[in-house]
Length: 276
Image (cartoon, helix red, strand yellow):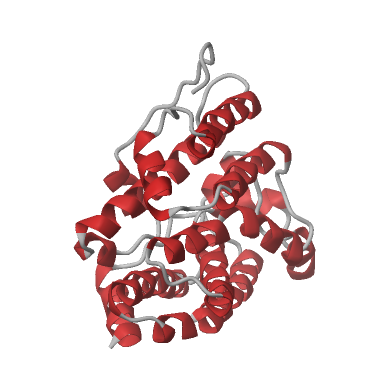
């Protein structure tokens, strides 16, 4: 971090973060060379998220300072995150996806709701899609068609995470359910404040979950198009998303009482079906 900049974040271990997010257990069995690069990328992503969600003081200033430090990786300076620097240099990763992830967290400071689904998808192009594009580069399997499929999977993953965390996001002052869809289904912001989920909100979440499931369907060819460790890793991402769709449906979309979580058995079942 730039000298003189004070940023306070209460960190948690990467393993704990991955367990709480929709990251698959398949990644744990990858060869060390892949696993360490992915851990560096996810560690960066979680640091940026924590700066945007948990750091004290001016969070926009904190993100700006972090991005300046990040730029040192590509300019030949000495960046604070040497693990990420080693990965970027070993794989010749471009800076652009990393800057998009920082910009997503800036947007979170300025934007607390989205009017349309298209607006929300534009946000996902900053907050989610860059991760998948970096993963393809880690495995050296990127192509134009594969990027399109990866974007569909990553946006779907971001969406189901939002649908899981409606209550948590509301407490943080954010609503990711598109305002146009809320109006269409007769849902108000105040409906997100309770401890049980109203029927209208359940119907809205069913509609939005189906949208995410369709994105997973669109992205499924990516798994079939890959082989080896890349296929296992990407299949694991997709399996985690599909299992989360199952969890939301199994809970009848009651996301205010508790957060629906995918089961390990469900993730494994989808993983076997996709990579076999």
